[in-house]
Amino acid sequence: MTENVKINRGLKGVYFERSAVSDIDGAAGELRYRGYSIHDLATQSSFEEVCFLLIHGALPSADDLAAFDAELKAARTLPTEVFDIIAACKHGHPMDVLRTAVSALAALEPASQTVGEDAFVANGIRLTSQIPMIIAAHEAIRNGRDPVAPDADLGHAANWLWMLKGEKPSAAAAHLADVDFILHAEHGSNASSFAARVTIGTEANLHGGIVTALSTLAGPAHGGAAEDVMKMVRDIGTPENAAAYVKAKRSAREAVTGFGHRVYRKEDPRARHMRDGVRRLGEEMGAPEWYEILQAVVEAMKPYARHGLNVNVDFYSGVIYQLHGIPMDLYVPIFAIGRMPGWVIQCMEQQHSNILIRPLTLYNGPEARDYVPITARG
Image (cartoon, rainbow, N blue to C red):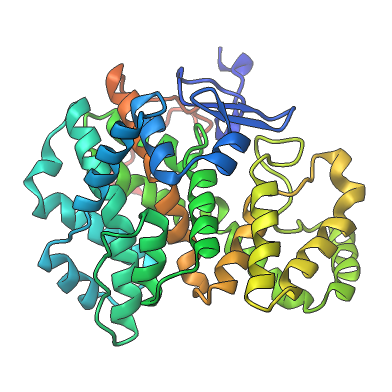
């Protein structure tokens, strides 16, 4: 009976639910949030506006956006105990510290236990503001500094850079961070979003879903690409070495980091916006060589584009963080900052028409066996 069962390993190609959020056309290389092109959002919108769009389903009016922005800014607070927890595990990996701190918030903030659409929105807004605070506080504490207090005059992305570095970012740097967050805000049923849905499917609260998402994002196969690209760039060293590097990788049948995607067959539509940002930021900071190395790799990879090995968004992200002097172990936590609204709306969608997610596995173990008491075993 089980011989004709088709196994879709990794659930590849399996539709498990409907969603009104991300429209991804992998063959055409297109991405839309709630019907809006990622290109329009990346060039004309802000992260705060995209958060509102994803969570509420429509672009905000000026008054709506001002009120939403005020909610985000008012949520830039952490219980004292969270700073103590960060200090207690300051030598841990930033993703472990972030996950632990978010889990602690579930125990320290009574509102986190409430479920329902309104509660998910309120808790989602609060966590969206708290997660960058946690990451920045950990970076300060592990380096013997006091955490930098948030600045209510700064937007979400600019305030993140301020808390992280203790200096006001340039308008261009803040804008690029804002675009980075927009591009990572939502991407359908990726591994961490699906994992969050599984948790919410059990009728857990939002904090539980976000802790699950963070745990899943921490795996290098999901969130580690930007860090791997930066390691590759350092290995290559100069643009002139890129062609030989790619040739050696392909000859050994090894992947070139930052190329190919589980969904896209053409270039990741988000990549172009990060590419332009790397070029501009590199020029601003007097380090154009990083961009030149990346583009030399792109050129060397052109013959493989017909096989679907096109550049993805994470190919450029790592170099942007490097130009800011951000440690590599913070690259995945930065991904989490941008992905927060996506996780929130995925959890909300799951809760709206909830069903326990319980797929099957096809048994291929031993046939039925008789139990032998331990005294009778050889």
